[in-house]
Length: 132
Image 1 (cartoon, rainbow, N blue to C red):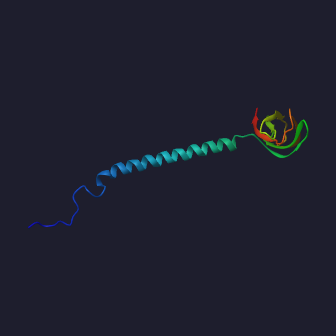
Image 2 (image 1 turned 180 degrees about the vertical axis):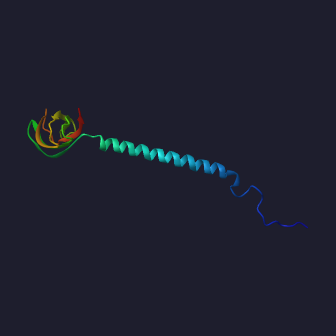
């Protein structure tokens, strides 16, 4: 007659041999996660903190061969730079693009600029601003 064992076979269940590998993977994952978080934080700080000029299109008025754009520019005092605007036709084709310079001691500039177009534009889009 044989006896029946109630214990599971050795090494078949449980993870005692993989505990060291699991711990190593957790440490490596934690370090990589912390590095990724630091990298995202750096790029966010660089984009927000180092951007000396930002702008916003308040409104625009379409004319036959131009678009008048009301642009609000916020910048550091004494900073100079330019903002790039473009206009597109109803078909999506670009009909006008120009850079507009901003300088001076003011930190906020409200200005209406005229963007000349080759055909009737339907939009006024701010592509970006760059400091000199």
